[in-house]
Image (cartoon, rainbow, N blue to C red):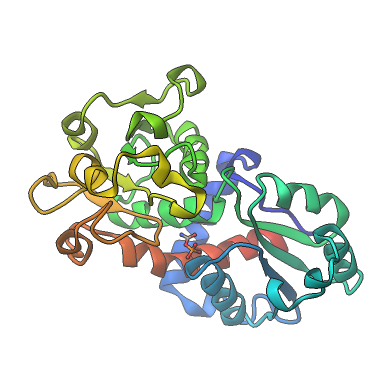
Length: 296
Ligand code: CP
């Protein structure tokens, strides 16, 4: 019997704690995961571009001895007009154990999960959720703080278009975070839509006294740039650099970073502050633990 991994809002706190703990154990002991997915067949389908998520879902499956088959959207029969739905039902007829799906439509992995017995793993859907990113962020926070409860976290940037922010709204409820948002008004949800999340009034209060500041990418492919007067103004008023970075905080970013816009090179490349490559490293172990949750 397999389980889906569709979003943080579908998971119990206990499930999330188990996945995070398992990822941390995997990081520290490779004998725990070798052969854990032997004879399992995993299909990856990315309808949107990806570097980190696709590579780490593939790498983690291979490290666990699974077979991984990637469906290249550009070279598949979808280019002949076959629908996503027909594609997945035909692939399902080959009885894979899991589908890892990134799709530009919000809710699409959940929709497709109704038509397969295989586990469906959401690798990011539209502007809805990016739950494996939330898990790897939690693993990274745990590694740094040794605790993921009661954290002070501010997410800065294009909140409305961010599936990472949507997943962390759920994380914040589970782990009693003091979560706040900051960004240009055109990129922030209305306060009445987000109970218990503070909209910060100014940059200073947004960045001070936070355990973690999470910066989000201006999603130029989703036309986020059209909600801004200019990218250089965004950088001036909302970017973190060597002059304004607060002491005793950690900077996170899901990547890819618009270098010099959300974050200056001097901060981005300084691992004393920036956890970005640690997040990517932990992504491999987080995704292993997600496979374990779904398939074992
Ligand atoms: N963080 C993230 O989802 O990166 P990719 O788009 O490169 O997978």
